[in-house]
Amino acid sequence: METFTYTGKDREGKEVTNTVSADDRFGVYAIARGLEHTVSSVEKNSKFNLSQLLNIEKLNYKLSRVKDDELIMVTRNIGSMMTAGLTVSRALSVIERQSTNPRLKGVMKQLVEKINQGDSFYESLSKFPEVFDDLYVSMIKAGEESGNMAESLQTLSLQMERANTLKKKIKGAMIYPIIVMIIMVIIGILMLIYVMPEITSVFEGMGKDLPATTAFLISASNFMVAHTLSVIVGMIAVVLGFVRLLKTKWGKISTSWLIPKLPIVGTLAKEANSARTARTLSSLLNSGVDVIQSIEITEEVLQNVYYKEILAEAAVRVEKGTALSEVFIERKDLYPILVGEMILVGEETGQIAGMLGELAVFYETEVERKTKDLSTIIEPLLMVVIGGSVGFFALAIIGPIYSISDGLS
Image 1 (cartoon, rainbow, N blue to C red):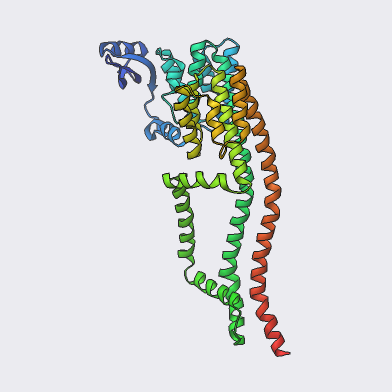
Image 2 (cartoon, rainbow, N blue to C red):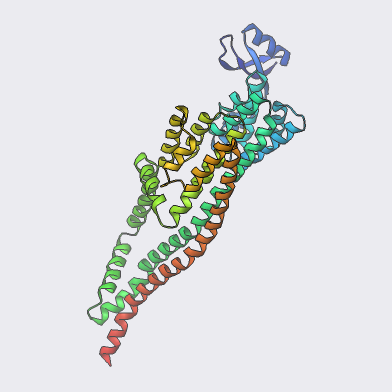
């Protein structure tokens, strides 16, 4: 007899996994019927399976994650396969077989099982919130109910791709200055630990009074040499603590208030949030999601606390009969004037989804242009900071040498 493991549901509808001994798979189904279980999948167990013993497959599933680019590609491929005439479950099976990502492979397999058991596509997706957010599930639901699933998938993939591109461009503009600043800090620490002690011994041998800047560097160097490990650990702890603080409620409120008020970066943040708001609302409305639900889902998509409050207020007021444009026109401190005016035109012409789509394209283009300009602006500023730092070290070290040389002559 062989050992098999089957998964299914008991008579109360609860999921069960059971390992049984039987001559073949037909024997497994007979045992399951005797236990009043419905079987969804059966796997034959080998006598010695190292992967199963160590549960490597489950570990890989938990450690891996589905990246944005992967999800965009999956969404586009499912839409293309459905346009070609494949069913949802068959399209998902194709994705499962060709995927190398353990998490994505496992999710696709479970989706197929749930759909084969009678669940709708959007209900199955909602069981995996770590992969499919509310926006994704709502657009699939709208497409499923309207019978335009393939079209909804293509619209969703386009929306996700543009949102992901926008996010990458903003992150890309920030990476360069951050890397430069990190390198500067590392070089400064290395100079204080290894270079300054050699120079300090020279100054001490001269027996002259040193300038304040030189004395400061010597004190900092002595402290770094004496407490190197403590200083490095302390700096790492400060950085990690700061990052953790930003994720707290107070940190999110503070950054949400500060970023839109910063010069240059503030304008970029406002336009990026405007683009994301317009793109999400446009995609949801085009998919057939009602206005109130579209606003509520868009609220979840946005990260800034104050933008979330505007969308929450908009949902309440629109439900009471207020025009959507009125809410945005009143909040010119966070949304540019054009946003409210374009929505107003859309409401007057009955083309609000189309207007929002045009608005999204406009601000996405603006953000792309300004991120390029931001790199151009940041480079000379970084050169000034680097030059100032180098000049400070040079004056602190060379200044005393010149003064001593003058005293000898």
